[in-house]
Picture: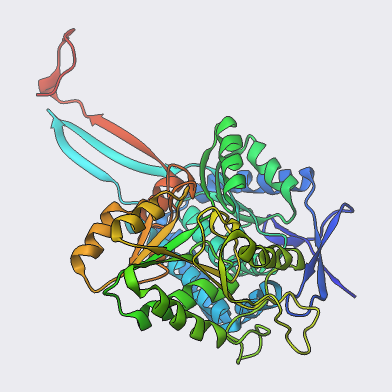
Length: 498
């Protein structure tokens, strides 16, 4: 009998109501593995009500208590990381080692959240004026909603709710409907660690659940990761409802390879960054910009490595890349490769014909490499979100940086070079929020913040790190003056500093 996945509300798993269900698949086999209950408006309201009800007690709890719960949570996640990774592999399809890496990166943010007493230290100015002290505080914003994508079903939720609850907020998570089981396990482990009922809730569903959260008057802030068109709409709708919002959108990340670069290092980086997790990540390298005369040599080295990538089911230790998330997405990604030659690109490696023996119904697609891609080609203009790498040629650094900066997105960018001066110039001139120097996927560590520029971010704050703390809290300034016998008397003059 097929399992039905419900929700996590007020500290317990609850079955879905009698409404619609969606299907969860194993991408490696195409088989249906579960049904997912689609949350009704009433169920979303129930989750928000649980979060609202838990808010006063949790916001009023000591930093020591919050930190203790988070330390216990971190220990449970560490002990159960392989179980969590297996769930990710089964529903997303990524190889097991990649899933373990995802969990490890999520744990970095839990580590950060464990240090909440340090993160929420205020500031104090004594004697700002005569016998006047001024203190700056940070307090929770209230109920926070998180909407997370399919490509990192554990890591992105862990980017959001541990820091939010550490800061005294309560949280309602709406994970992707394509791979929801990781989020349910995360919530269960949080309860086991001692997080009070109602502080973390999970509602499963589709667009309707997201819209209900965006419109709900008791939701104070919304954090979103997904495509650019949806991120733009999330910001518009949330701001119109008076909410704080951070909405991370799509990307078209460029990797510039200068003529002096170590070409083997660059080729390794390009393959790892383009095809890891089947290219289904917003920090994947989508475009390599080969500068000067190195293009043919670089493309040959990338092609040699690309052809050797082993594609297969994620639970096979021999596999280096797993399937795509759905059959529909596989067909969409393949379409870019199939149209590329007609639009002026050279197809160097074509992965559209790949078949994995014994997994013919799986959503597998081989790696593809396109060279001399025109900037008007669909494969260059669009975010593909699959294992397709475009190479464009540039005659100079100036042409390369202009090409990168002309992109509407600004999530990440990388440069490969041995020249420190060129690298410094690139990191200052490139219009992107995250920059790598000889690092193809420059995802920041947990105590820095993640987020892009331009159409890759809508809102005022990046996620996690110091900006994540600012997003999850509101500033308050308290000015204090205690009576002193020397202050007696009436003074109708304008208050001033002295």
